Image (cartoon, rainbow, N blue to C red; front, top):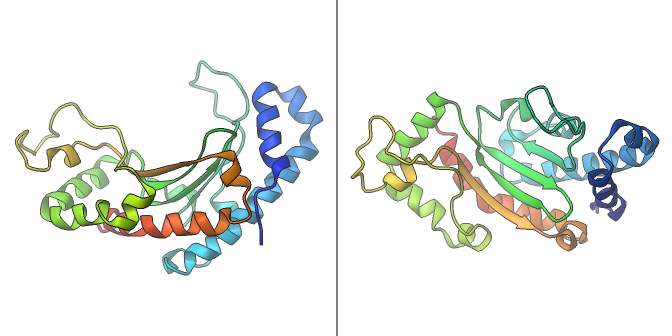
Length: 220
């Protein structure tokens, strides 16, 4: 069974200490090996997710994995490379991250995570989510309070507005849910869990518990 290999995490750790093109070019073979390991893992993870979420059938890892190069045009931090590897497993691939909720697999020494949901959805989608919560609050609460969801995710995550969004009363019974600007489920995992032989199975189990949230967010 495919697993994340220790040299993959080791490469990311070394990259964090040597985030420059000269070092990267000298260690390109290590990068390519880490990239290959990550891509193989993600492809098998996709195949596992298809078993309970067939909407992503036919999806390829290469269409889900983010480039390691950073976009530094508008950043004060000019480090050229990300010190993580991430894949957003969603219908149509990562390019559809602003259209559909999906599953995010992220490895980074000391900062790995299994996450998903809708991250800063565009205004029309965000409004649709808020209106759906307004229409079906009991169903939404049942999803985020489900024992399987609570087992893996402490609570619904995501930055919130300080005030009620336009069109909603500050006294709305579920205003705290409606204030969200993102609707996320996040579970942090440590390096030992990332490197474990059962990481693939565990990740699939966590994402299966997330699926009802994604389904709700995608009904618009």
